[in-house]
Length: 75
Image (cartoon, one colour):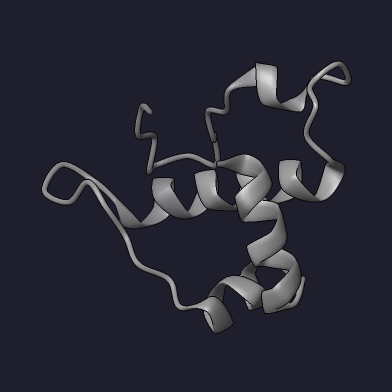
């Protein structure tokens, strides 16, 4: 994913957001949040990031159990 840290632009895979995609809306939301977090926390020197379940629950606005369920759907 290209990094545009000087702007508010975030590049996403459009296929995951189409209506004919088999993902639920919550799985799509989790995908968007994870993409944004990847964009924010990775860069030229780091190609991974870590978020605790509690932090991810705050980021998505969904509780931990729901995040785990929809993460499995994404996988």
